[in-house]
Length: 72
Image 1 (cartoon, helix red, strand yellow):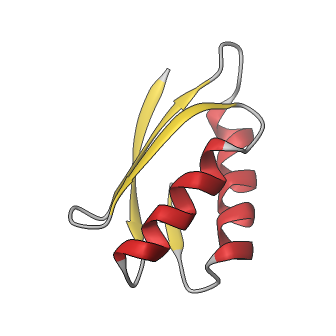
Image 2 (cartoon, rainbow, N blue to C red; image 1 turned 60 degrees about the horizontal axis):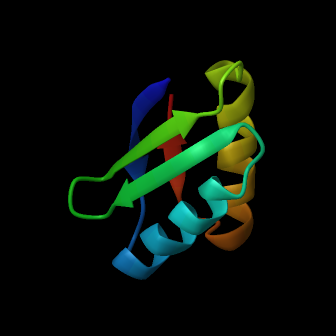
């Protein structure tokens, strides 16, 4: 399953850090973060519940970029 989320991030480098971190989160198969469109696209592993995974993605992203936000 793939979903798209609106994000708030300050710079392209921060978006790259968010993308790398999201990809390492359990339950995420792949992730793409676009600074230009302020969107995060997440592909979830089979059987993963996005409502359980995305809070972990947000928490992990805030560890590398505390000013970021993911809206779900």
